[in-house]
Image 1 (cartoon, rainbow, N blue to C red):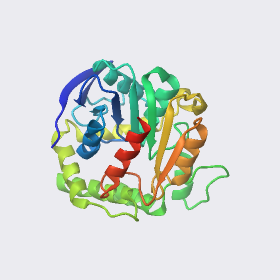
Image 2: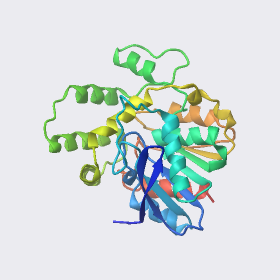
Image 3: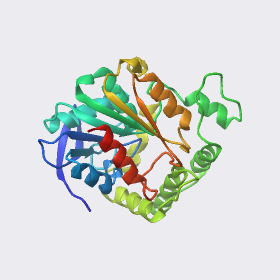
Image 4: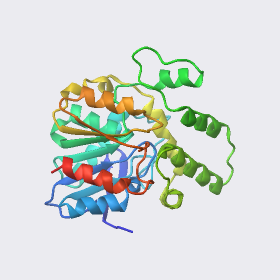
Amino acid sequence: MLTGEEKFVRSGQVQLWTERFGRPDDPTVLLIMGTSTQGIGWPDELVEALLESGRQVIRFDHRDTGRSDSVDFTTHPYALADMAADAAAVLDGHGVTAAHVVGTSLGAAIGQWLAVHQPARVRTLTAMASSPMGNNPGPAWARAMAGQQAAAGELPPPTARFLKHVMESAKALRTTVQQRIDADVQTWRVLNGDVLPFDEPAARRFVEHCYARADDIAAASNHDLAGRRWDDDRRASLSRITAATLVLHGSDDPLFPQAHGEALAAQIPAAHLEIVPGMGHHPFFSPGLTERIAGSVIRHTT
């Protein structure tokens, strides 16, 4: 297992776990994970490839995940802007002025927010498995779950299989840790999509590691609450982004179908869109995809 320099940094009242690899003088890649996912979701193989290409790498646990502080969302609700402030605080905690920001899913939305509102912090942006940060998928989801057609001009909802999984998961009763781990592994399987192989043993090891290191595993569900807040800062035009941007998207993403990646790239000036055949929403449990993603990031950040 790859180990780096672990450090806790403060973002307001929240303490965040971070891990840095490489030489401080090398260009920095800041890795930002998706909803409810710990920083160790960025696999060691990806980190090692970035290090070998002459970059230092920082990954971190979002608030409410892993070893970072948990928040009482009822009394201290937060939104995308607060999570972006966390990412900026991670850079500050390591003395980094600007970084190559690489985010997936929610992490890519955080990257968009930084590139719009704090452009000096973002050398380049890589947005993977995401949607425009101002897109509210809630109505499309509701219509799809009710068996209704999408509205005109609306980005497509998740696949029928993913929606079925969400509904079945909501009804399931899980009373043991093992049952919850099994359910999480199944979620990763669905997110992998139906085209490329799924490495279930790797996914299970990851989920078990997350349960073992989390201070409060249930707190991660607060990200769903934060994601439902659509403040004006989130609706800012992506045409304001000046950082060179790579949009990486799977052709078979069950959560954000390909049209979401296409819409994101279309809204960012001169963004490069790379569609990865067969890739689902999370690429790191499908053999060979980590190496492909690493290559794309390295080329973009050179």
